[in-house]
Structures are given as structure tokens and as C-alpha cells.
Image (cartoon, rainbow, N blue to C red; front, side, top):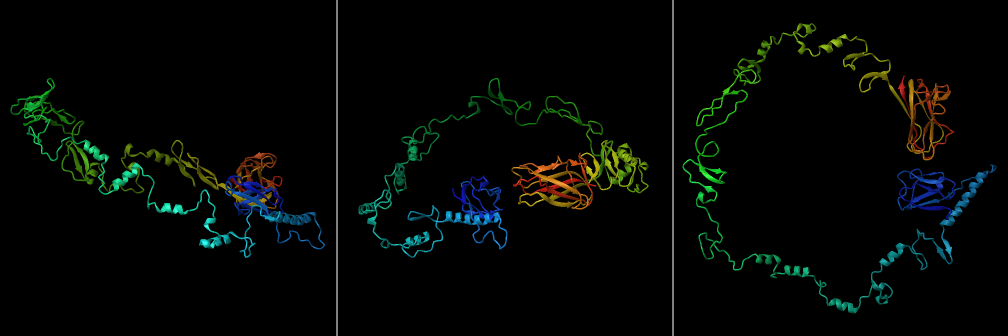
Length: 568
């Protein structure tokens, strides 16, 4: 096993790879994916002896992953001074630096195997251009030399020196003679379809096609062209065979039995299933003359009795006009466009605006709507006063400074008294009410990329008296193996004054492993018990800390804390 590197193969999802060799410092560990060097802190982090790739940078499937050590070679890691105390750790560091460099030099160097140098399947790069026969040659040099040979004479030997193979064969004189005897464009034996296509494409090929055969089959033997038929011919080429019989009169039709007289029409008779001549009566057929009978049914607004007399006569209908039920309304007079209408005994008549005011006993200037105008001075009946009850309810309300008028659950108008200082108007979806102003303080307690550590993370002043009801905490990256415990310390006057935790000992704010958030709404009451709120005075201080007794998960990142409640 190698002492200075380890190789893996990515699968597209694995993000953690073990470092199998010792090293003095993270910068001495080089990580390459598909022969591309990656950057610590951007593509990966080194945690607990492992290379952990960041999200989105996991090695792709089948990608080669190499983790290797390259110890500092340009300067010593320990600089000993005269008279200084020799510590074991310093001596170990200096010794290991030399030891590790020797291991790396050994594993990265060419090795001698018998009389040859073994590159262990690695490329030798950055070679110079060869000048002597025994110099190693680069690929570029060989490619250039071969490309420059553009004539057979520049190569040693002749084609006759080549050995006949199974794929590449010599082109002999016999082959050349055979090729000379083959016409240009010659092909192998043609198929029937290829032969047919070639014949069709030839000029005047006189090809007899399937379509021609079908056409010929459809022509009768002895058929002639341009024969002029004659309906009356009884022989010869002009004779029409199988002619239908054309009737010369209606009676020639099998279903017509008619010897009509003047004014009669054809009628169908079901009893004999035939057409017969008959008189045009009862409105059941066509013909000349007047309509002699019309059936009329009296409707709303019409009156009269149907005359059932046979023959021509006059049928009279009466139109019932009036303004009663089931009467037809007519216009009384000649109203103009945009006039109003008024009922009269004779129907509807037109009225202009002035006529309407006169009709209702009013005038355009008879109302002076000033402060003296009151409902009692008008003859407004109950139908004209839909808001009287609402106005009466409003008039009964007691005015008070700052109160507002609201609708209650009755429903009717009511007053909502002015709320206490610093209260705001809120709604529960049904009623309005006064409530305390919501308060919230958000605190960023770390950056987004560094691992969390114990100790004080952030200090914030409470700008106004606050009743704390809940504390929430969140992480940008969750822990993978242990919890993150957060404490909030309260300082009454300044960050260095006496301090008290907001939480009881058994109720610490804890974000579990794998979780991104947590909250707590139970606080210490200062005497060993708990309470649902905690009062913070104006200009007091809150200090966010991770207790030293709880080591945070190394994978956790981006801690934020929210303090929620109401302003006093």
C-alpha cells in the first residue's frame, strides 16, 4: 500500500473519503478528481481524518479520485533558536517533515527494474527535443518526423518488404489487369426491380405496365372509338341496347290512376296506394283560388268565437284594450323619446320631468337640505326609510375619545373603546380587537461555511421593553452525528453584568442531529420552576452562546436565533 496517497473511484453520490496516511497540516493534503486539483473550503473540507466534498461537488460516477500528501519542501516547519527549549512536539514535527518528504520523493521517482527504469505506468512529461540517437523522444517529435515523410523513397525498404496480411494485402499486377477489364460504374448482378427501373428510364422502351394490362381488360372485344349513339336506332353501331321505357303520360306510371278535370290536383290515396285526381278542398293540397278556412284560437287580449261555416266568410277577432289584468296596453297620446310614462284609463301617456314633479306634488327647489333638514319634515313613509333602525342604533351610541364604530355579532353597530398604549388594532377573522405590537429580534450567530464552536456567539441589545414568548434557532447545514445546544443569557444592564439563562436547566434549546431548526416556549421563573413568558427590560442585553459542555456537531453551519414576543 502506498504511504503518501490513496486512490478511489467516485459514484456520483459519495461525499466522504478516508485519508489513509499521516500529514502535518491540511494544506499538505492535495485532492484531485479526474486529474483536476480541487480547493479546500470550496470543493471539500477535511474533517476528522476524512475528505468531505461539499454539496454539489461530489465526484462523478467512475471519476478517479486521488488524495495525496505533498509536505512543505521549501522551508522547515520548525525553526530552532539558540537557547530555546527543545520540545518533543517540535522535534517530532521537524523529523516527520523530513521523513514524509523522503517517502513522497521515493514514491514519485522513477524506479530501476533490472537494467531498465520503470515509470510504473505513469507518463513522463516535459521532455526536451531529442538530439542524440539514444535520447528519449516526445510524441510531438515522432509525429512531426513521420508527417514529413511524403514519398515512399524517404522510407527505408520497399512495398515488397511488407508481409501479406489478412486485412491489408498487396495490390499485384494480376489485380491491376482485372481492374482494367471492368467498366466504370459496373455493379454485381441486378435484381428484377433494378432491371425494371432501368427499362422504364430508357427512351422509347415500349414497356407494357400493369396499368396498361388493367385498362385493356376493361375494353370489350370489338369496341370502337367515336360511335355516335341514336335513341331511335334499332340496329347498327348507333343502336342503344337495354333502353328504359319513358312514360308519355301520368297514367303510364304504375301508381297513378288519374283522369283529372279542370282545377283538380293529384292526391295520394292510402287505401289503393296510388295517386288519384281530386278536388282541392280542406287545405290539404295546392292549386289556385283563395284559402277558404283558417283555424284561430283566441288568446290573452283577444276575444271572439270561431266561425265554422263552410265556404268563404270573414272571421272577426276583438282586441281587449285597457289597464286591467289580461288586457293589451296601448299608448295614450304621442309621447317623445326619453319621457316618463304614467298610467291613464286609456293606457300609457308620456310625461316630462316637470309633469312628474307636479304629479307627485313636489318641485325642483322645494327641498333646502341644510342643517335644519330633518326626516320629520318630510312625508317619507316606512318604505322610504330603510336606514331608520341603523340610524337609531348609531344615535344611541355613546361617543368617547378614540373609540371606533364596529359591527358586532348581533349584527348591529357598536363602539370599540380605545386600546391601551402601544396596542394595535387586529382581527381574528370575525371581530376587531386591540392587541400588543408583535416583537421579533433576529440574530446571526455564525457565518455560513465555518464549523460551529463553543462560547459566546452574538450579543444584542433589547431596544424596548419586551415580553419574550418563544425562542427559535436554525442551521444552514444540519449536524450529522450530534446535537447543537444553544443558550440565551440575559444581562439586565450591560453585557458584563450579572447573567441569567432564559431557560430552565432541563429545557435547553436543542437542535437534534440531522435537523435544521428547533424552538422553545418555556422559560425559567428564577426560582427553579418554569413559566410561559420572560420579561426583558428596555436596554437590557441578550447573549447567545454554545455552552462549553456541549461540543457542537462538526458538520453544522450557519446558526441563527430568533427571539419572538410582544413589545411592552
